[in-house]
Length: 172
Image (tube, rainbow, N blue to C red; front, side, top):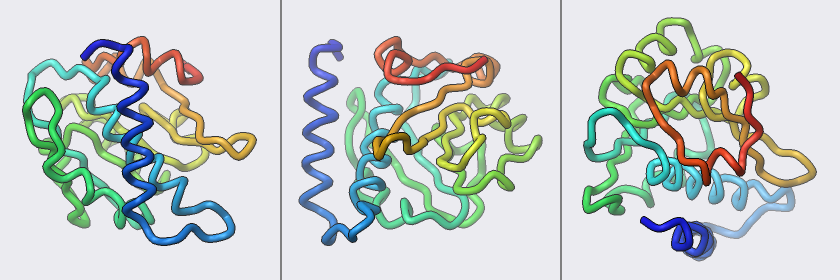
């Protein structure tokens, strides 16, 4: 997909999510998780896995994101339907993207399985990227920002587009 089409696509996804969710609370929690969901879809479009296959987005742990991810089920990327797995303990090998809701879940075993099975590890807890996670959502100045651990991404034989990397703070 040409890069000039990606920005309007992300914007339209965010607007689409805004119409699907309940009213936002005073802290903007719903908007935050709408954007995280849109970003996960965007990651699926902008990442390259060694083996082309339909994308499965998995969630492990307790996160408000669990209520938002089902809207991605069946969406298309390169003609393939996206699948969402919300089981309590998803099989890492069956995931393309695994969202971990806490730092305790980011174990050496999980990071090794992610590396072996080319799974993009995403989280939204402090120091996620510094502890071996690949992409971390963080709030700075009331804005959602990305931190990418490029060494962890490369060790899993994944490639992230330059468009995605330009939006992120990179650590190695």
